[in-house]
Image 1: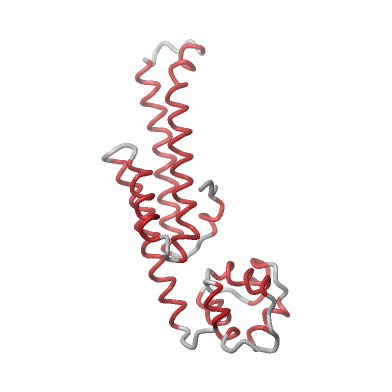
Image 2: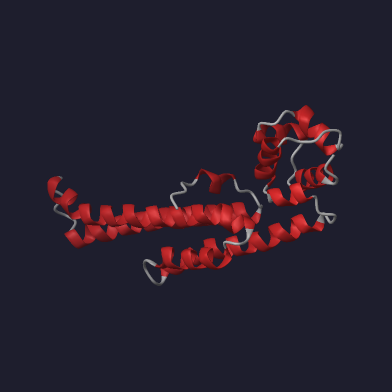
Length: 198
């Protein structure tokens, strides 16, 4: 048996507010297996352990090395979550300086990618900002042509570009705020839905 694995899984599951059934649903591991793991009645397979670790946002090494102190889980997540929050909120600098929505998150990701949560979820924040920048640039180029093709005379070419940028800017702002709210609850569900292209 691997000592303390069950205690670690149980402590992290409870800290996230998951029942055994909810962890089972989220991880795809049967409730019976989770119950047996938590009571240290079975040796888990690597694949099973990885699914549970990913669902609970635990570094798999914590489970496989079976650290004696359960505090190491919280310390690991606290360090990563704080940097992830800063990384996400750094996008807001684009309110003052356009195009910094990509620069600062990349800077944070590069500096803190050794932290488990930053490495796992930070790439999704950077990917979203990269895709947002590319798609916004394409729409900014196309906006004046759409205005002309639709024969919209009450908006100038500059006005159509400005309107397009503001529309996409508000979308980015909304998603950044949504991520910040989710991170404050240590909920990674929304971030997991973001594309990961890096």
